[in-house]
Length: 104
Image (tube, rainbow, N blue to C red; front, side, top):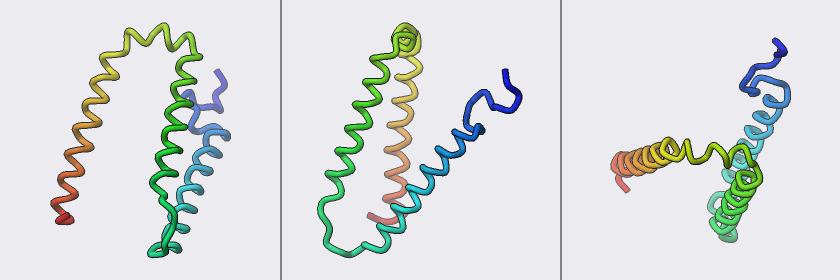
């Protein structure tokens, strides 16, 4: 193994460029949203929903085309189910706490 590359891949040059691109995209979106707040815009929710559905489809396509992943999937289903349940539980819990703090 090359000693200059982290096994995870996040600290390689490509990984750092990907993180920078994601961060810049997020910052650009925040700046544009801040500048356009209060203006009458088209329904952004539909665009966001369409983007999320496209990402979920591409994730499913990637999983379905990866035979190695499909072979190990039966052995990891329980872990995935536990992670899903915990993510849903804490998302609802944090939303309830935040709503009480903001008094929505």
